[in-house]
Image (cartoon, rainbow, N blue to C red; front, side, top):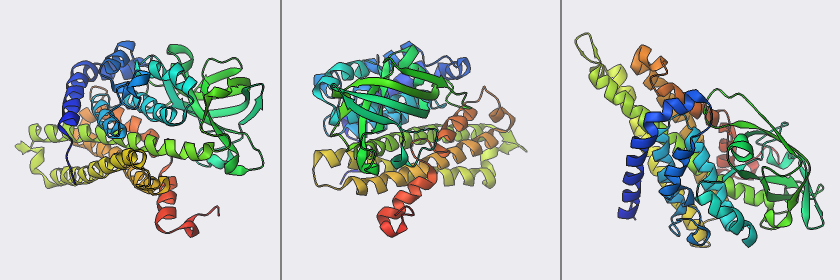
Length: 405
Protein backbone atom coordinates (compact mmCIF):
# COMPACT_ATOMS: atom_id res chain seq x y z
CA UNK A 1 0.00 0.00 0.00
CA UNK A 2 1.57 3.26 -1.19
CA UNK A 3 0.65 6.69 0.10
CA UNK A 4 3.07 8.63 -2.05
CA UNK A 5 3.29 9.64 -5.68
CA UNK A 6 5.55 7.63 -7.94
CA UNK A 7 8.81 9.15 -9.18
CA UNK A 8 7.16 9.79 -12.56
CA UNK A 9 4.14 11.45 -10.94
CA UNK A 10 6.38 13.65 -8.79
CA UNK A 11 8.36 14.71 -11.85
CA UNK A 12 5.16 15.58 -13.68
CA UNK A 13 3.86 17.54 -10.69
CA UNK A 14 7.09 19.51 -10.27
CA UNK A 15 7.39 20.24 -13.98
CA UNK A 16 3.81 21.49 -14.15
CA UNK A 17 4.18 23.59 -11.00
CA UNK A 18 7.27 25.27 -12.42
CA UNK A 19 5.43 26.01 -15.67
CA UNK A 20 2.31 27.34 -13.92
CA UNK A 21 4.33 29.49 -11.52
CA UNK A 22 6.34 31.00 -14.36
CA UNK A 23 3.75 31.43 -17.11
CA UNK A 24 0.26 31.42 -15.56
CA UNK A 25 0.34 32.87 -12.04
CA UNK A 26 1.85 36.23 -13.12
CA UNK A 27 -1.03 36.90 -15.54
CA UNK A 28 -3.85 35.38 -13.49
CA UNK A 29 -5.26 38.73 -12.37
CA UNK A 30 -5.10 40.09 -15.93
CA UNK A 31 -6.99 37.03 -17.22
CA UNK A 32 -9.73 37.58 -14.64
CA UNK A 33 -9.94 41.36 -15.10
CA UNK A 34 -10.15 41.28 -18.89
CA UNK A 35 -13.04 38.80 -18.93
CA UNK A 36 -12.04 38.00 -22.51
CA UNK A 37 -11.45 34.29 -22.25
CA UNK A 38 -8.34 32.27 -21.52
CA UNK A 39 -5.43 33.36 -23.76
CA UNK A 40 -4.50 30.92 -26.51
CA UNK A 41 -0.88 30.85 -25.38
CA UNK A 42 -1.93 29.63 -21.92
CA UNK A 43 -3.95 26.77 -23.41
CA UNK A 44 -1.16 25.93 -25.84
CA UNK A 45 1.45 25.90 -23.09
CA UNK A 46 -0.50 23.30 -21.14
CA UNK A 47 -1.18 21.31 -24.30
CA UNK A 48 2.56 21.24 -25.08
CA UNK A 49 3.12 19.65 -21.65
CA UNK A 50 0.56 16.97 -22.50
CA UNK A 51 -2.00 18.15 -19.94
CA UNK A 52 -5.03 18.02 -22.24
CA UNK A 53 -4.05 14.53 -23.35
CA UNK A 54 -3.82 13.00 -19.87
CA UNK A 55 -7.09 11.09 -20.30
CA UNK A 56 -6.68 10.38 -24.02
CA UNK A 57 -4.71 7.38 -25.37
CA UNK A 58 -1.64 7.94 -27.52
CA UNK A 59 -3.38 6.47 -30.58
CA UNK A 60 -5.67 9.52 -30.52
CA UNK A 61 -2.88 12.03 -29.93
CA UNK A 62 -3.00 11.95 -26.15
CA UNK A 63 -0.48 11.28 -23.43
CA UNK A 64 -2.56 9.13 -21.08
CA UNK A 65 -0.55 6.96 -18.67
CA UNK A 66 -2.63 3.78 -18.96
CA UNK A 67 -4.37 2.90 -15.72
CA UNK A 68 -3.34 6.19 -14.05
CA UNK A 69 -5.30 8.73 -16.08
CA UNK A 70 -7.41 10.17 -13.27
CA UNK A 71 -4.53 10.14 -10.79
CA UNK A 72 -2.49 12.28 -13.19
CA UNK A 73 -5.48 14.50 -13.97
CA UNK A 74 -6.01 15.05 -10.24
CA UNK A 75 -2.38 16.18 -9.90
CA UNK A 76 -2.65 18.48 -12.92
CA UNK A 77 -5.85 20.25 -11.87
CA UNK A 78 -4.53 20.91 -8.36
CA UNK A 79 -1.39 22.50 -9.78
CA UNK A 80 -3.29 24.65 -12.28
CA UNK A 81 -5.72 25.83 -9.59
CA UNK A 82 -2.83 26.90 -7.37
CA UNK A 83 -1.65 29.27 -10.09
CA UNK A 84 -4.99 30.45 -11.50
CA UNK A 85 -7.10 30.79 -8.39
CA UNK A 86 -10.17 32.25 -10.10
CA UNK A 87 -10.91 28.67 -11.23
CA UNK A 88 -11.53 29.61 -14.88
CA UNK A 89 -8.51 27.77 -16.29
CA UNK A 90 -8.81 24.79 -13.91
CA UNK A 91 -12.48 24.36 -14.84
CA UNK A 92 -11.79 24.68 -18.56
CA UNK A 93 -9.12 22.01 -18.24
CA UNK A 94 -11.02 19.61 -15.99
CA UNK A 95 -14.03 19.66 -18.30
CA UNK A 96 -11.86 18.65 -21.25
CA UNK A 97 -10.14 15.95 -19.21
CA UNK A 98 -13.24 14.53 -17.52
CA UNK A 99 -15.69 14.47 -20.40
CA UNK A 100 -12.99 13.73 -22.95
CA UNK A 101 -12.26 10.65 -20.84
CA UNK A 102 -15.87 9.51 -21.15
CA UNK A 103 -15.67 9.90 -24.93
CA UNK A 104 -12.49 7.80 -24.84
CA UNK A 105 -14.34 5.06 -22.94
CA UNK A 106 -17.69 5.06 -24.74
CA UNK A 107 -17.41 7.05 -27.96
CA UNK A 108 -17.55 5.45 -31.39
CA UNK A 109 -14.28 5.03 -33.24
CA UNK A 110 -15.29 7.70 -35.74
CA UNK A 111 -16.08 10.21 -33.00
CA UNK A 112 -12.84 9.51 -31.15
CA UNK A 113 -10.73 9.92 -34.27
CA UNK A 114 -12.55 13.11 -35.17
CA UNK A 115 -12.29 15.09 -31.94
CA UNK A 116 -9.87 13.56 -29.42
CA UNK A 117 -6.66 14.59 -31.22
CA UNK A 118 -7.96 18.18 -31.25
CA UNK A 119 -8.79 18.03 -27.54
CA UNK A 120 -5.32 16.72 -26.72
CA UNK A 121 -3.75 19.50 -28.81
CA UNK A 122 -5.72 22.19 -26.95
CA UNK A 123 -7.66 23.15 -30.08
CA UNK A 124 -11.02 21.75 -29.09
CA UNK A 125 -13.15 22.24 -25.98
CA UNK A 126 -15.35 19.50 -24.51
CA UNK A 127 -17.89 20.25 -21.79
CA UNK A 128 -21.09 18.92 -20.22
CA UNK A 129 -24.56 20.33 -20.93
CA UNK A 130 -27.04 18.53 -18.71
CA UNK A 131 -28.70 21.30 -16.68
CA UNK A 132 -31.98 22.67 -18.00
CA UNK A 133 -33.96 25.81 -17.05
CA UNK A 134 -36.42 23.78 -14.96
CA UNK A 135 -33.69 22.19 -12.85
CA UNK A 136 -30.23 20.67 -12.68
CA UNK A 137 -29.92 17.98 -10.02
CA UNK A 138 -33.08 16.13 -11.08
CA UNK A 139 -31.45 14.63 -14.15
CA UNK A 140 -34.29 12.15 -14.67
CA UNK A 141 -36.60 15.10 -15.39
CA UNK A 142 -34.70 16.32 -18.46
CA UNK A 143 -37.02 17.50 -21.25
CA UNK A 144 -34.63 17.77 -24.24
CA UNK A 145 -35.54 15.12 -26.81
CA UNK A 146 -33.69 13.17 -29.46
CA UNK A 147 -35.52 11.39 -32.28
CA UNK A 148 -33.73 8.99 -34.63
CA UNK A 149 -34.19 9.88 -38.28
CA UNK A 150 -32.12 8.89 -41.32
CA UNK A 151 -28.99 7.99 -39.35
CA UNK A 152 -29.16 11.07 -37.15
CA UNK A 153 -30.60 12.21 -33.84
CA UNK A 154 -32.84 15.25 -34.23
CA UNK A 155 -32.45 17.27 -31.02
CA UNK A 156 -34.96 19.75 -29.60
CA UNK A 157 -34.78 21.40 -26.20
CA UNK A 158 -32.90 23.81 -24.01
CA UNK A 159 -29.90 23.72 -21.66
CA UNK A 160 -28.94 26.29 -19.03
CA UNK A 161 -25.98 27.28 -16.82
CA UNK A 162 -23.47 25.57 -19.10
CA UNK A 163 -19.73 26.27 -18.88
CA UNK A 164 -17.80 26.91 -22.10
CA UNK A 165 -20.53 28.24 -24.39
CA UNK A 166 -18.37 30.86 -26.11
CA UNK A 167 -15.33 28.60 -26.00
CA UNK A 168 -16.95 26.00 -28.26
CA UNK A 169 -19.06 28.34 -30.41
CA UNK A 170 -16.85 31.40 -30.95
CA UNK A 171 -13.45 31.55 -29.31
CA UNK A 172 -12.25 28.11 -30.32
CA UNK A 173 -14.17 25.03 -31.38
CA UNK A 174 -15.76 22.12 -29.60
CA UNK A 175 -18.99 20.82 -28.17
CA UNK A 176 -20.76 19.35 -25.18
CA UNK A 177 -21.86 15.89 -24.16
CA UNK A 178 -25.42 15.80 -22.91
CA UNK A 179 -28.46 13.70 -22.15
CA UNK A 180 -31.45 13.66 -24.47
CA UNK A 181 -34.70 11.80 -23.95
CA UNK A 182 -35.04 9.12 -26.62
CA UNK A 183 -37.77 7.02 -24.96
CA UNK A 184 -40.36 9.36 -23.39
CA UNK A 185 -42.06 6.55 -21.45
CA UNK A 186 -39.01 5.09 -19.73
CA UNK A 187 -38.01 7.88 -17.30
CA UNK A 188 -34.29 7.50 -16.41
CA UNK A 189 -34.00 4.38 -18.60
CA UNK A 190 -35.00 6.34 -21.68
CA UNK A 191 -32.04 8.70 -22.04
CA UNK A 192 -29.21 8.63 -24.54
CA UNK A 193 -25.84 10.31 -24.02
CA UNK A 194 -24.66 12.18 -27.08
CA UNK A 195 -21.90 14.59 -28.11
CA UNK A 196 -23.26 17.74 -29.75
CA UNK A 197 -20.80 19.94 -31.68
CA UNK A 198 -21.39 23.58 -30.80
CA UNK A 199 -21.59 24.92 -34.35
CA UNK A 200 -24.25 22.70 -35.84
CA UNK A 201 -27.19 24.41 -37.60
CA UNK A 202 -30.16 24.95 -35.31
CA UNK A 203 -28.12 25.74 -32.20
CA UNK A 204 -28.47 29.18 -30.65
CA UNK A 205 -26.94 30.31 -27.40
CA UNK A 206 -26.96 33.02 -24.77
CA UNK A 207 -24.49 33.95 -22.04
CA UNK A 208 -24.88 34.94 -18.39
CA UNK A 209 -22.89 37.36 -16.27
CA UNK A 210 -21.29 35.35 -13.47
CA UNK A 211 -19.62 36.82 -10.38
CA UNK A 212 -16.54 34.61 -10.67
CA UNK A 213 -14.47 32.54 -13.09
CA UNK A 214 -14.54 35.61 -15.33
CA UNK A 215 -12.37 34.14 -18.10
CA UNK A 216 -14.73 31.18 -18.66
CA UNK A 217 -18.13 31.77 -20.21
CA UNK A 218 -21.40 30.46 -18.83
CA UNK A 219 -24.64 30.37 -20.76
CA UNK A 220 -27.38 28.30 -22.30
CA UNK A 221 -28.21 26.50 -25.52
CA UNK A 222 -31.43 26.16 -27.48
CA UNK A 223 -31.63 23.20 -29.87
CA UNK A 224 -34.16 23.49 -32.70
CA UNK A 225 -34.23 20.47 -34.99
CA UNK A 226 -30.48 20.02 -34.58
CA UNK A 227 -29.31 17.03 -36.60
CA UNK A 228 -26.51 15.18 -34.83
CA UNK A 229 -24.83 12.25 -36.64
CA UNK A 230 -25.62 8.97 -34.92
CA UNK A 231 -21.91 8.21 -34.53
CA UNK A 232 -21.90 10.96 -31.89
CA UNK A 233 -23.91 8.73 -29.53
CA UNK A 234 -21.87 7.47 -26.57
CA UNK A 235 -22.52 3.88 -25.57
CA UNK A 236 -25.91 2.31 -26.17
CA UNK A 237 -29.16 4.06 -26.95
CA UNK A 238 -31.32 4.56 -23.83
CA UNK A 239 -28.40 3.82 -21.50
CA UNK A 240 -27.22 7.39 -21.27
CA UNK A 241 -28.31 8.06 -17.70
CA UNK A 242 -25.78 5.57 -16.39
CA UNK A 243 -22.94 6.91 -18.54
CA UNK A 244 -23.76 10.41 -17.35
CA UNK A 245 -23.40 9.27 -13.75
CA UNK A 246 -20.02 7.68 -14.56
CA UNK A 247 -18.94 10.93 -16.15
CA UNK A 248 -19.93 12.91 -13.08
CA UNK A 249 -17.84 10.58 -10.92
CA UNK A 250 -14.73 11.63 -12.84
CA UNK A 251 -15.75 15.28 -13.13
CA UNK A 252 -16.42 15.56 -9.39
CA UNK A 253 -12.97 14.22 -8.58
CA UNK A 254 -11.42 16.91 -10.75
CA UNK A 255 -13.72 19.63 -9.40
CA UNK A 256 -12.60 18.63 -5.91
CA UNK A 257 -9.00 18.78 -7.11
CA UNK A 258 -9.50 22.35 -8.34
CA UNK A 259 -10.99 23.37 -4.99
CA UNK A 260 -8.12 21.70 -3.12
CA UNK A 261 -5.47 23.38 -5.29
CA UNK A 262 -6.97 26.82 -4.78
CA UNK A 263 -7.38 26.24 -1.03
CA UNK A 264 -3.82 24.99 -0.65
CA UNK A 265 -2.44 28.13 -2.26
CA UNK A 266 -4.76 30.37 -0.22
CA UNK A 267 -3.55 28.71 2.96
CA UNK A 268 0.09 29.17 1.96
CA UNK A 269 -0.52 32.86 1.25
CA UNK A 270 -2.15 33.23 4.65
CA UNK A 271 0.75 31.44 6.37
CA UNK A 272 3.33 33.64 4.66
CA UNK A 273 1.45 36.85 5.43
CA UNK A 274 0.87 36.22 9.14
CA UNK A 275 4.53 35.35 9.71
CA UNK A 276 5.62 38.69 8.22
CA UNK A 277 2.86 41.10 9.28
CA UNK A 278 3.68 42.67 12.66
CA UNK A 279 0.91 43.71 15.05
CA UNK A 280 1.52 45.03 18.57
CA UNK A 281 5.22 44.38 18.15
CA UNK A 282 5.02 40.72 17.07
CA UNK A 283 4.00 38.66 14.02
CA UNK A 284 0.30 37.90 13.60
CA UNK A 285 1.19 34.21 13.76
CA UNK A 286 1.86 34.66 17.48
CA UNK A 287 -1.87 35.17 18.07
CA UNK A 288 -3.59 31.82 18.56
CA UNK A 289 -6.86 33.14 17.16
CA UNK A 290 -5.10 33.23 13.80
CA UNK A 291 -2.48 30.48 14.01
CA UNK A 292 -4.97 27.92 15.34
CA UNK A 293 -7.39 28.68 12.50
CA UNK A 294 -4.61 28.08 10.00
CA UNK A 295 -3.61 24.88 11.79
CA UNK A 296 -7.19 23.58 11.71
CA UNK A 297 -7.57 24.44 8.04
CA UNK A 298 -4.27 22.77 7.22
CA UNK A 299 -5.34 19.59 9.04
CA UNK A 300 -8.71 19.47 7.27
CA UNK A 301 -7.15 20.11 3.88
CA UNK A 302 -4.48 17.44 4.30
CA UNK A 303 -7.12 14.86 5.19
CA UNK A 304 -9.20 15.82 2.16
CA UNK A 305 -6.18 15.71 -0.17
CA UNK A 306 -5.36 12.18 0.92
CA UNK A 307 -8.93 10.97 0.50
CA UNK A 308 -9.13 12.68 -2.89
CA UNK A 309 -5.97 10.88 -3.97
CA UNK A 310 -7.65 7.65 -2.92
CA UNK A 311 -10.76 8.55 -4.90
CA UNK A 312 -8.73 9.25 -8.03
CA UNK A 313 -6.92 5.92 -7.62
CA UNK A 314 -10.27 4.12 -7.25
CA UNK A 315 -11.55 5.80 -10.42
CA UNK A 316 -8.52 4.42 -12.27
CA UNK A 317 -8.85 0.97 -10.72
CA UNK A 318 -12.53 0.57 -11.62
CA UNK A 319 -11.56 0.38 -15.29
CA UNK A 320 -8.17 -1.22 -14.77
CA UNK A 321 -9.53 -4.14 -12.73
CA UNK A 322 -13.14 -5.05 -13.58
CA UNK A 323 -14.97 -6.05 -10.41
CA UNK A 324 -12.75 -3.88 -8.20
CA UNK A 325 -15.83 -1.94 -7.09
CA UNK A 326 -19.12 -0.79 -8.57
CA UNK A 327 -19.72 2.69 -9.94
CA UNK A 328 -22.24 3.24 -7.14
CA UNK A 329 -19.59 2.41 -4.55
CA UNK A 330 -17.25 4.82 -6.28
CA UNK A 331 -19.98 7.47 -6.21
CA UNK A 332 -20.01 7.42 -2.40
CA UNK A 333 -16.26 8.03 -2.18
CA UNK A 334 -16.37 10.82 -4.73
CA UNK A 335 -19.46 12.46 -3.24
CA UNK A 336 -17.64 12.72 0.08
CA UNK A 337 -14.89 14.64 -1.72
CA UNK A 338 -17.33 16.83 -3.66
CA UNK A 339 -19.39 17.56 -0.53
CA UNK A 340 -16.35 18.69 1.47
CA UNK A 341 -13.99 20.30 -1.04
CA UNK A 342 -15.91 23.41 -2.21
CA UNK A 343 -17.15 24.41 1.25
CA UNK A 344 -13.74 23.88 2.85
CA UNK A 345 -12.03 25.81 0.06
CA UNK A 346 -14.48 28.70 0.40
CA UNK A 347 -13.96 28.86 4.16
CA UNK A 348 -10.18 28.75 3.78
CA UNK A 349 -10.28 31.56 1.23
CA UNK A 350 -12.64 33.63 3.40
CA UNK A 351 -10.50 33.24 6.51
CA UNK A 352 -7.34 33.94 4.55
CA UNK A 353 -8.88 37.21 3.35
CA UNK A 354 -9.59 38.12 6.97
CA UNK A 355 -6.01 37.29 7.97
CA UNK A 356 -4.83 39.68 5.24
CA UNK A 357 -7.02 42.49 6.54
CA UNK A 358 -7.74 45.35 4.15
CA UNK A 359 -5.29 43.99 1.58
CA UNK A 360 -7.38 40.82 1.33
CA UNK A 361 -10.28 42.92 0.04
CA UNK A 362 -8.32 44.30 -2.91
CA UNK A 363 -7.93 42.93 -6.43
CA UNK A 364 -4.17 42.96 -5.92
CA UNK A 365 -4.72 40.03 -3.58
CA UNK A 366 -5.77 36.81 -5.40
CA UNK A 367 -7.89 35.50 -2.53
CA UNK A 368 -11.06 37.25 -3.68
CA UNK A 369 -10.75 35.63 -7.09
CA UNK A 370 -10.41 32.25 -5.42
CA UNK A 371 -13.46 32.76 -3.20
CA UNK A 372 -15.64 33.94 -6.09
CA UNK A 373 -14.54 31.08 -8.29
CA UNK A 374 -14.99 28.26 -5.82
CA UNK A 375 -18.45 29.51 -4.87
CA UNK A 376 -19.72 28.20 -8.21
CA UNK A 377 -19.21 24.71 -6.79
CA UNK A 378 -20.60 25.58 -3.37
CA UNK A 379 -23.89 26.67 -4.97
CA UNK A 380 -24.18 23.51 -7.01
CA UNK A 381 -22.13 23.14 -10.20
CA UNK A 382 -21.38 19.44 -10.92
CA UNK A 383 -23.84 18.42 -8.22
CA UNK A 384 -24.99 20.48 -5.24
CA UNK A 385 -23.95 20.08 -1.61
CA UNK A 386 -27.15 18.35 -0.53
CA UNK A 387 -27.20 16.14 -3.62
CA UNK A 388 -23.84 14.73 -2.49
CA UNK A 389 -25.34 14.06 0.93
CA UNK A 390 -28.20 12.24 -0.75
CA UNK A 391 -25.79 10.01 -2.67
CA UNK A 392 -23.76 9.26 0.46
CA UNK A 393 -26.92 8.46 2.43
CA UNK A 394 -28.21 6.23 -0.37
CA UNK A 395 -25.01 4.19 -0.46
CA UNK A 396 -24.41 4.03 3.31
CA UNK A 397 -27.95 3.80 4.69
CA UNK A 398 -29.66 2.27 1.66
CA UNK A 399 -32.46 3.14 -0.75
CA UNK A 400 -34.76 3.82 2.21
CA UNK A 401 -32.94 7.17 2.51
CA UNK A 402 -33.85 8.21 -1.05
CA UNK A 403 -36.87 10.57 -0.98
CA UNK A 404 -37.96 10.01 -4.60
CA UNK A 405 -38.41 6.24 -4.20
